[in-house]
Image 1 (cartoon, helix red, strand yellow):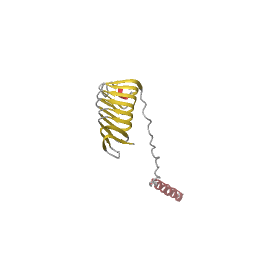
Image 2 (cartoon, rainbow, N blue to C red):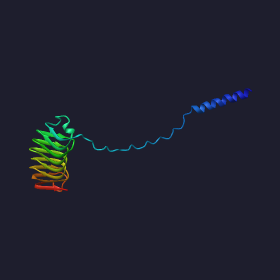
Image 3 (cartoon, rainbow, N blue to C red):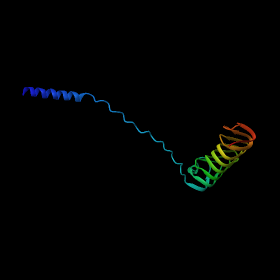
Image 4 (cartoon, rainbow, N blue to C red):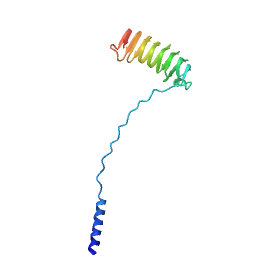
Length: 165
């Protein structure tokens, strides 16, 4: 009986020592790659006539899509698109214009589909015409003016007419 008791004690101690040893590390769980989702374009509330005095005055004018006429007295700007006419006394600076963007001094936009008409016209991409004294564009445009600059065009600067399609 004494031997059985000693054998049971040794077995119990051996089992306890084996349980105290650190376990082999588990295989690392591979994380799924994060899927990149593109956000849909923003939806702006719209208006037919948009009157703006300065960028941010009134506060909602730059964030209101215009389906008609946007007037800047003296300047206009904003990220919401204009579908129609953007006319300003000193500076017209809406990011996207589909139609006519005109001003006495300067027009500035990211993308214009239509016509930019001012003394100085600046845009990244114009699917249409820039008509002014000095015209600047990065990519696509057709320019008529005294000095015409196209950053990524075949010819950087030309007088009278320059284009890149």
